[in-house]
Image (cartoon, rainbow, N blue to C red; front, side, top):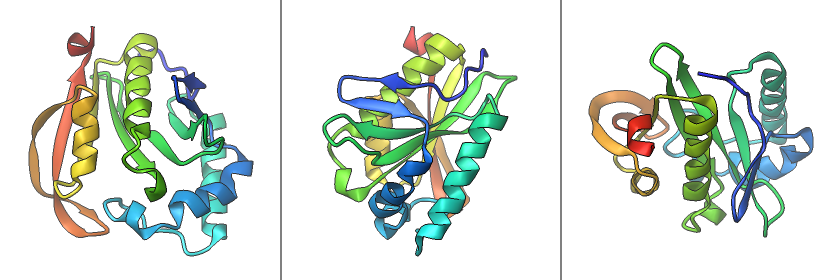
Length: 184
Protein backbone atom coordinates (compact mmCIF):
# COMPACT_ATOMS: atom_id res chain seq x y z
CA UNK A 1 0.00 0.00 0.00
CA UNK A 2 1.07 3.58 -0.60
CA UNK A 3 0.35 5.33 2.70
CA UNK A 4 -0.60 8.99 2.45
CA UNK A 5 -1.82 9.70 5.98
CA UNK A 6 -5.01 11.60 6.72
CA UNK A 7 -5.53 13.97 3.82
CA UNK A 8 -8.55 16.15 3.17
CA UNK A 9 -11.35 14.45 1.22
CA UNK A 10 -14.47 16.12 -0.11
CA UNK A 11 -17.84 14.83 -1.27
CA UNK A 12 -20.97 16.60 -2.43
CA UNK A 13 -22.11 17.27 1.14
CA UNK A 14 -19.06 16.61 3.30
CA UNK A 15 -15.53 17.62 4.11
CA UNK A 16 -13.41 14.92 5.72
CA UNK A 17 -10.36 16.43 7.37
CA UNK A 18 -7.95 16.06 10.26
CA UNK A 19 -9.16 16.84 13.77
CA UNK A 20 -8.02 20.28 14.94
CA UNK A 21 -7.58 21.45 18.51
CA UNK A 22 -10.40 23.95 17.98
CA UNK A 23 -12.77 20.97 17.39
CA UNK A 24 -12.44 19.80 21.01
CA UNK A 25 -15.56 21.44 22.47
CA UNK A 26 -17.68 20.51 19.47
CA UNK A 27 -16.53 16.88 19.61
CA UNK A 28 -17.37 16.71 23.30
CA UNK A 29 -20.83 18.26 22.94
CA UNK A 30 -21.83 16.55 19.67
CA UNK A 31 -20.60 12.97 20.10
CA UNK A 32 -18.05 11.99 22.75
CA UNK A 33 -20.29 12.86 25.73
CA UNK A 34 -23.35 11.07 24.34
CA UNK A 35 -23.95 7.59 25.83
CA UNK A 36 -26.19 6.72 22.85
CA UNK A 37 -23.18 7.19 20.56
CA UNK A 38 -20.86 4.95 22.59
CA UNK A 39 -23.39 2.19 23.30
CA UNK A 40 -21.80 -0.16 20.71
CA UNK A 41 -18.20 1.07 21.14
CA UNK A 42 -15.24 0.06 23.30
CA UNK A 43 -14.80 3.40 25.05
CA UNK A 44 -17.18 5.03 27.52
CA UNK A 45 -18.76 8.40 26.80
CA UNK A 46 -16.83 11.36 28.16
CA UNK A 47 -18.13 12.93 31.35
CA UNK A 48 -15.95 16.06 31.16
CA UNK A 49 -14.21 18.02 28.45
CA UNK A 50 -10.73 17.24 29.78
CA UNK A 51 -11.22 13.65 28.56
CA UNK A 52 -11.85 14.98 25.04
CA UNK A 53 -8.86 17.32 25.28
CA UNK A 54 -6.61 14.36 26.15
CA UNK A 55 -8.03 12.26 23.33
CA UNK A 56 -7.80 15.12 20.83
CA UNK A 57 -4.17 15.75 21.78
CA UNK A 58 -3.37 12.07 21.15
CA UNK A 59 -4.98 12.33 17.72
CA UNK A 60 -2.94 15.45 16.87
CA UNK A 61 0.31 13.76 17.94
CA UNK A 62 -0.48 10.64 15.97
CA UNK A 63 -1.03 12.64 12.75
CA UNK A 64 2.56 13.86 13.03
CA UNK A 65 4.11 10.53 14.06
CA UNK A 66 2.32 7.91 11.99
CA UNK A 67 1.85 8.04 8.18
CA UNK A 68 -0.50 5.03 8.53
CA UNK A 69 -2.87 6.96 10.85
CA UNK A 70 -6.11 7.61 9.02
CA UNK A 71 -8.57 9.53 11.16
CA UNK A 72 -11.00 12.06 9.75
CA UNK A 73 -13.61 14.27 11.34
CA UNK A 74 -16.81 14.38 9.30
CA UNK A 75 -17.97 17.93 8.58
CA UNK A 76 -21.26 18.41 6.72
CA UNK A 77 -20.89 21.55 4.60
CA UNK A 78 -24.36 22.78 5.61
CA UNK A 79 -23.54 22.33 9.32
CA UNK A 80 -19.99 23.73 9.28
CA UNK A 81 -18.57 21.75 12.20
CA UNK A 82 -17.55 18.14 12.88
CA UNK A 83 -20.31 15.68 13.78
CA UNK A 84 -18.21 12.52 14.16
CA UNK A 85 -15.23 10.55 12.94
CA UNK A 86 -14.22 7.83 10.53
CA UNK A 87 -11.02 5.97 11.36
CA UNK A 88 -8.79 3.16 10.16
CA UNK A 89 -8.56 1.22 13.42
CA UNK A 90 -6.33 -1.54 12.07
CA UNK A 91 -4.03 -1.85 9.05
CA UNK A 92 -2.40 -5.07 7.84
CA UNK A 93 0.21 -4.20 5.21
CA UNK A 94 0.85 -7.87 4.36
CA UNK A 95 -2.69 -8.40 3.11
CA UNK A 96 -3.45 -4.78 2.19
CA UNK A 97 -6.33 -4.74 4.66
CA UNK A 98 -7.80 -1.65 6.28
CA UNK A 99 -10.36 -2.04 9.07
CA UNK A 100 -12.65 0.97 9.40
CA UNK A 101 -14.78 2.30 12.23
CA UNK A 102 -17.19 5.24 12.46
CA UNK A 103 -18.68 7.37 15.19
CA UNK A 104 -21.34 10.07 14.71
CA UNK A 105 -23.38 12.29 17.02
CA UNK A 106 -26.88 10.90 17.57
CA UNK A 107 -28.42 14.19 16.43
CA UNK A 108 -27.10 13.40 12.94
CA UNK A 109 -28.15 9.76 12.64
CA UNK A 110 -30.22 8.74 9.64
CA UNK A 111 -29.14 11.60 7.37
CA UNK A 112 -26.74 9.58 5.20
CA UNK A 113 -23.60 11.39 6.34
CA UNK A 114 -21.72 8.29 7.49
CA UNK A 115 -22.68 6.35 4.37
CA UNK A 116 -21.35 9.19 2.22
CA UNK A 117 -18.17 9.48 4.31
CA UNK A 118 -17.56 5.72 4.27
CA UNK A 119 -17.99 5.61 0.48
CA UNK A 120 -15.44 8.43 0.08
CA UNK A 121 -12.95 6.64 2.31
CA UNK A 122 -13.43 3.38 0.38
CA UNK A 123 -12.64 5.24 -2.84
CA UNK A 124 -9.56 6.84 -1.24
CA UNK A 125 -8.19 3.55 0.09
CA UNK A 126 -8.68 1.63 -3.15
CA UNK A 127 -7.70 4.34 -5.63
CA UNK A 128 -5.00 6.26 -3.74
CA UNK A 129 -3.58 3.92 -1.09
CA UNK A 130 -4.06 0.76 -3.20
CA UNK A 131 -5.61 -1.32 -0.43
CA UNK A 132 -6.71 -4.85 -1.26
CA UNK A 133 -9.46 -5.20 1.34
CA UNK A 134 -11.56 -2.89 3.48
CA UNK A 135 -13.42 -4.41 6.37
CA UNK A 136 -15.66 -3.29 9.19
CA UNK A 137 -17.18 -4.98 12.21
CA UNK A 138 -20.34 -4.24 14.13
CA UNK A 139 -22.54 -5.70 16.85
CA UNK A 140 -25.64 -7.47 15.45
CA UNK A 141 -27.89 -5.22 17.56
CA UNK A 142 -26.41 -2.17 15.81
CA UNK A 143 -28.56 -2.56 12.69
CA UNK A 144 -27.86 0.98 11.45
CA UNK A 145 -24.13 0.23 11.12
CA UNK A 146 -24.92 -2.92 9.17
CA UNK A 147 -27.10 -0.91 6.76
CA UNK A 148 -24.32 1.64 6.18
CA UNK A 149 -21.89 -1.11 5.25
CA UNK A 150 -24.40 -2.78 2.95
CA UNK A 151 -25.11 0.52 1.16
CA UNK A 152 -21.37 0.96 0.66
CA UNK A 153 -21.04 -2.43 -1.02
CA UNK A 154 -19.49 -4.46 1.80
CA UNK A 155 -20.35 -8.15 1.82
CA UNK A 156 -21.29 -9.89 5.08
CA UNK A 157 -18.72 -12.59 5.83
CA UNK A 158 -20.08 -14.03 9.04
CA UNK A 159 -20.57 -13.54 12.73
CA UNK A 160 -17.90 -14.16 15.33
CA UNK A 161 -19.64 -15.48 18.44
CA UNK A 162 -18.93 -13.73 21.76
CA UNK A 163 -15.90 -12.15 20.11
CA UNK A 164 -15.76 -8.66 21.61
CA UNK A 165 -16.61 -6.63 24.68
CA UNK A 166 -18.43 -3.38 24.00
CA UNK A 167 -20.26 -1.09 26.40
CA UNK A 168 -23.21 -3.47 26.04
CA UNK A 169 -21.07 -6.38 27.35
CA UNK A 170 -19.64 -9.41 25.60
CA UNK A 171 -21.23 -9.60 22.16
CA UNK A 172 -21.14 -11.31 18.80
CA UNK A 173 -19.46 -9.34 16.03
CA UNK A 174 -20.52 -9.26 12.37
CA UNK A 175 -17.68 -8.94 9.86
CA UNK A 176 -18.14 -7.35 6.41
CA UNK A 177 -15.68 -6.50 3.66
CA UNK A 178 -15.19 -5.19 0.18
CA UNK A 179 -12.24 -6.22 -1.96
CA UNK A 180 -10.44 -4.15 -4.57
CA UNK A 181 -11.63 -6.65 -7.20
CA UNK A 182 -15.24 -5.97 -6.12
CA UNK A 183 -14.70 -2.22 -6.29
CA UNK A 184 -12.98 -1.88 -9.69
